[in-house]
Image 1 (cartoon, rainbow, N blue to C red):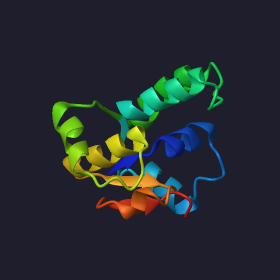
Image 2: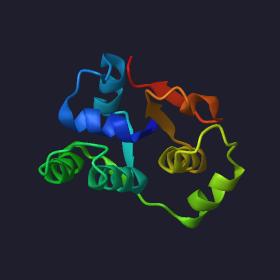
Image 3: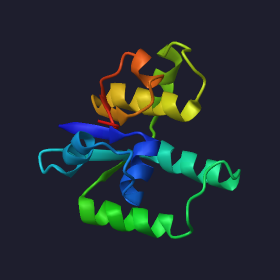
Length: 131
């Protein structure tokens, strides 16, 4: 199974946060699962941290790199197809990071793991991260 972690799910994973449900955690840990991390998530974390809308420790970057190495998570870069796919998404909400993750999941045939109910209104396969 190929999955894409929503930004908050990535943060929950790295922080070992209890909000990440047992089923979602098991799926992420499974050897049968290929986990992708979008560059859009790193961009979102960086912007929100700089704006002081998100608090992450200075060690988060190193922890993330270590996690990517040890877990086998794969980076998903943003390409032109992803960017162009956004124009076809309905305007259910205006979060540019969510919209990029949705477009990437659609283009790459990935299942998006999220706890955000707004994402589920889009035509994208999702798994509830809180379960």
